[in-house]
Length: 93
Image (cartoon, rainbow, N blue to C red):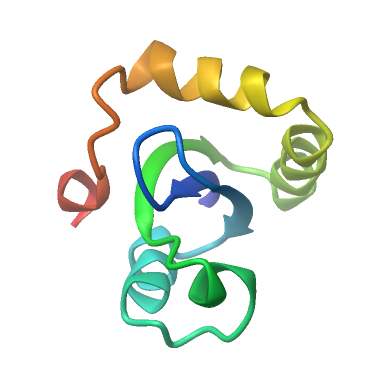
């Protein structure tokens, strides 16, 4: 399985889109600031949205698509499945 995910730092805050083959491990890394870069710098560690894929190429294609979306489109995507901006990490572990 492959996952495309969107993280946030606060409700309607800064967003980050990524792709991984191990969602639980990857979010754990973000939460514990084990990954240097944008998410660590901006304290982005809450899982707001994710999709699953069987094919790595499809997941990478979707990640690139989402990264090119307007911010509001990503916010709308989160709101559609997670209207309260809950951290979905507990749901996946």
